[in-house]
Amino acid sequence: MHKLYFKYGVMGSSKSAQALMTKFNYEQKGFRVLLIKPSIDNRDDNGSVRMVSSRIGLKSECIVFNDSMDLYEFFLKENEKKKVDVLIIDEAQFCKEKQIDDCQKISDHIPVLCYGLKTNFKGYLFEGSKRLLEIADSISEIKSICKCGFKAIMNAKLVNGVVVTDGAEIDIGGDEKYEAMCYRCWIEGQKKKDN
Ligand SMILES: [Zn+2]
Image 1: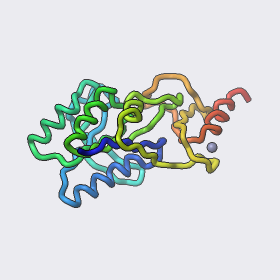
Image 2: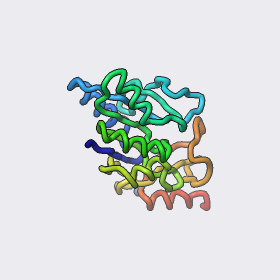
Image 3: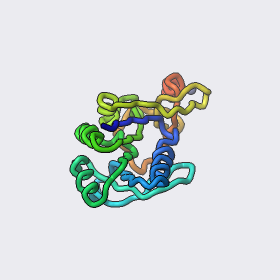
């Protein structure tokens, strides 16, 4: 019996870097690691290969999948080709509930490590993160700090320097910026437009 892990953190908390370092650590010892991530771009085919890169410069190939992929079937197929020792999922917040349930099944065979955000810029759980908090065997936080020095827990979306809380959950290629903040700074940041 292995475990399903959820390692969550805010934006910029080095989640991808940690996922990549974990991959390298396993590979150095001769283990086969599958690194996968949900596609937020529907043009990606299931199983296409993309790069995961981290802000500190690490990068690696990873396999992308979309909403429809059965992760358990995918694991069984890959494992048949060549034995898989560990599954690592980056951006796990974008997984569907069913896909996290698949991960729990995979963890009967191998460890499954999920890295991702807990909440969206509105302050609500993502679908994948919600399911992970419900059923992961091990949950840990990758901590980082707000500009004020408190622990950052919110993923603020900034448009013209103002924290916004409306719009689509996933926004690709917009002009907005994201910044990890403590709850107080997140609330204060929303008031700036009134000044
Ligand atoms: Zn703060």
